[in-house]
Image 1 (cartoon, one colour):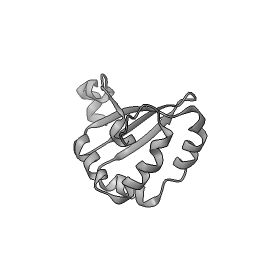
Image 2 (tube, rainbow, N blue to C red; image 1 turned 90 degrees about the vertical axis):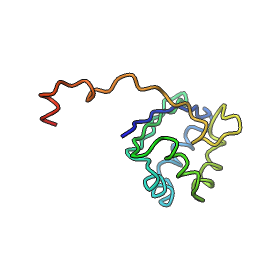
Image 3 (cartoon, rainbow, N blue to C red; image 1 turned 45 degrees about the vertical axis):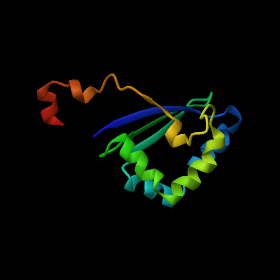
Image 4 (cartoon, rainbow, N blue to C red; image 1 turned 180 degrees about the vertical axis):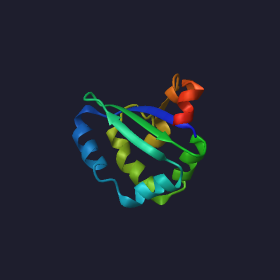
Length: 118
């Protein structure tokens, strides 16, 4: 299953409101994310606004993004969230994030005897 990590920059003066909005994401948005392959999805926010996101998907990243792009709720959510971010250059946040390269995954390097126990 592909693991995806990405970063965005939240505007410093919008950090508290961004956190408030994510404390109660619309139920239809949560359902749409899950239904389109955004699983084990988490967001981490540094005090200076650096946002790191992580999700796993049973489909490709492009398919997960396309699935969400096809939903009405995503269009509404992205329109509301776009104002919170720096340097999107006209892209929606879910299209304008910088995907990070995975360079290490513990389970990929565990010896076979440990993997058998898992």
